Image 1 (tube, rainbow, N blue to C red):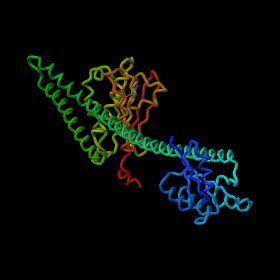
Image 2: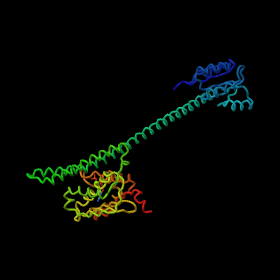
Image 3: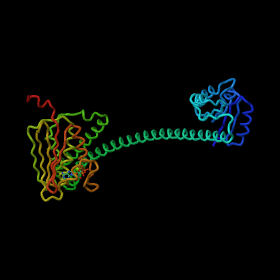
Image 4: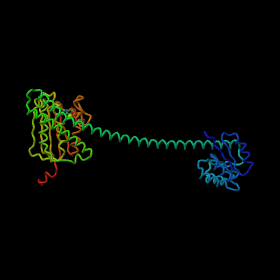
Length: 393
Ligand SMILES: Nc1ncnc2c1ncn2[C@@H]1O[C@H](COP(=O)(O)OP(=O)(O)OP(=O)(O)O)[C@@H](O)[C@H]1O
Ligand SMILES: [Mg+2]
């Protein structure tokens, strides 16, 4: 620790001499000034931690000196050593000079030594407190900076997760038409092994594969457009019944669907068109129908019901199955992108999450009713353009 310095100011050389002798062996350094002017000379060139001054001096009144010290060097501890014994002078000095102690002349050596040591200790304590405060401020500043930094990182992570979620939904939706292509080509391949293949059926298979390829193309175009944030604005008038019929036709590639599932299709014939992106509606139907077929895998009775209705100025699509149903506690989780009860490779859990995101983008809604062991019904409602109902009023 640095050596602390005491400055003694008195115009009487005798007093300075005896104080010099008295304070010589102390742990702090002592300096001696014979006038206010000399005192300032020291104050400007050295660090003074404690100042002890006489009051009546020819060039500068001790109180004026203390006032100035208080202003310029507020950390310095101020003491008075004076022959003025009347209480007014003492009080005045203490109040106006804001001094720590007032020592009377003639002084008691031991008492003076003790008081100066206390003043030195006081300075050290106050200095320590100032250092601690400074350190605390520095810590706070660093902490604020770290919080800021962490917040920025978290926001970046969240953004990335959002992008990741979107990317995996895209991949999921690419998978369905790909399966159509695959299925169509597989069967075509099988037919080709026949010496005399049925060209009509072969063309049908290739047609199915071609439709899948076209869907892929449209999805990719949709992604590119979405990337330019125009996706949902680029809409057309869609006939949901038409899309449903076509999609259910595709499911016939699946032998379970074709031979084992009993199908009830009841499409309303007064269904208004809705404006939207047909490829998104197609994905929605694919996901719900595929889930229904999967759910009935082990059910003795496999019945799929597909309905469309005009209900409360919305187009309602209802897809019911007689499958395994959904446990009550899972109902709240099925729309989450990481919820699946299917084995790895069979299900990703993204299907319903992507359906929900899409339906909500159309300001529509999706509801589910299910009882374990009996079956499930999903109802999607898409708002119909208000213009359709204009004639009613
Ligand atoms: N019709 C249904 N009947 C019973 N359970 C269902 C039905 N539809 C969805 N579920 C349950 O919800 C879960 C999540 O469905 P979601 O479509 O989001 O993902 P997935 O079907 O598991 O995977 P992927 O869609 O990628 O094939 C399913 O794993 C299943 O447990
Ligand atoms: Mg699914």
